[in-house]
Length: 452
Image 1 (cartoon, one colour):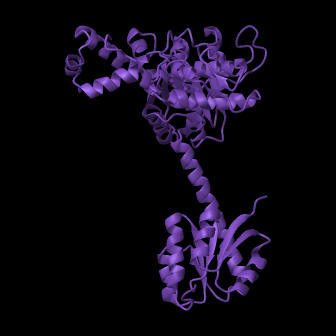
Image 2 (cartoon, one colour):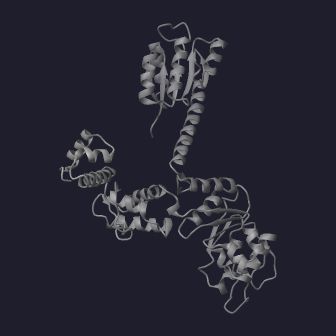
Image 3 (cartoon, helix red, strand yellow):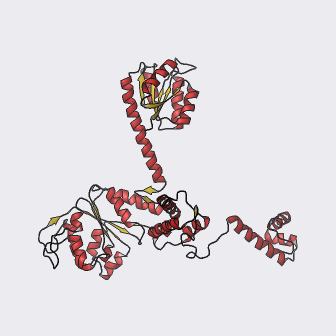
């Protein structure tokens, strides 16, 4: 296990040696005897904690040099942890050090038990702050609850999750197939007060209508032919947690009635039963349909819609998320590359263009599948548009660089001007709005003769 780095700044060599010996078993100890050595060591090794003597050369009897070191360290890292250890034990110096940003102040001779306790507390705080900074860096890179997205559209979704999760309000998640609606629901569950309970997901479109009511509410023994035992439904199983109903727009009318009653009263009856069963399961629903149109046509109950749509969020389609396409694609490439023993894979330029231009009708799910297949099919270290099976899908992609495109336009304009003016440089330059020397330079650079 790697030891925590500790920097001791002390002008007395004997004291430095004693402290290094006393603390060396628990820490990787670095030492310095003056301001220059302290700043060099701190810059090079970034210790978690610095023990700083205020009385340093060239004025060891005054605190100014030590306070200057403290100020310099904090300017390099505002979150640096510095414990001042000094014979300058006057209250005024202690207040100056703490006021300048020191974590704590100990007077010589140092009580080692007290120092050990302060160090442990200080290191623990430093580690917590490092973890927080790492978490913040991850958030800035677009990572949130296993989802990636730096675009404003996805940041709005993440903000919705943060605000809604701690409540118990029903949430409706809208979005096309493959956008990650279930991941949003799982994130809400993980951040909720019922995160310790189960997360039960059911796709209402994947279960036959005649079975869906039993799947949700369960049934009693003998409720129908073949019901040989009592069975719990998903609502009962999700008690204390979250019930996620995907494709809620496909819910049959008779099941809509029972679900509405459950949302209103938090209790239900199994199919074929009379006993009222309570469940505090939080209900989160999702759909890729327009539920408002469904309610207008009578296919979906309006009162149920308003019960479900207390909080509504739309997960954007992948084509609406700008550079998120490349961000997510690179994450998939790294993950599947490691999984299939192909670390270090990158996208070729044509693959990058294809990823950006393609419309992604299957959204993130399609992107995930294409990248996974491409990792398996790729021969070298670069994944091409052909490996992604996008070379034909996106048509003839532009292969020119910006420089090449600019030169092509310049060449066409210069040639046309020279043709119109029969090779007369002055007239062509006037038409192009440039000087004769500039036109000559262009012609030489582009390999154009006077005849155009």
